[in-house]
Length: 64
Picture (tube, rainbow, N blue to C red):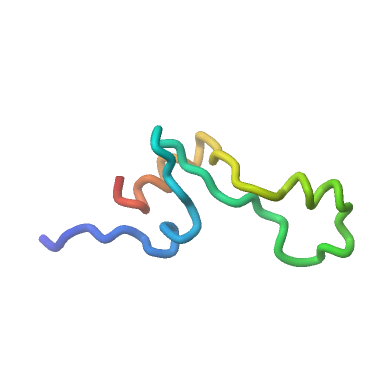
């Protein structure tokens, strides 16, 4: 059996912290920014911890 490969695209988009939490950039900050209030876009900056429902799926893609 060949080795399991981690999903390289996922690896570029998420980061695993030292304690094992998965953090990523929030969605909604790529286009149509003229229509969105600046308060909304400011709130979307920075990385946040992923939702608990997504963690299992993302960890499987990362091979953890």
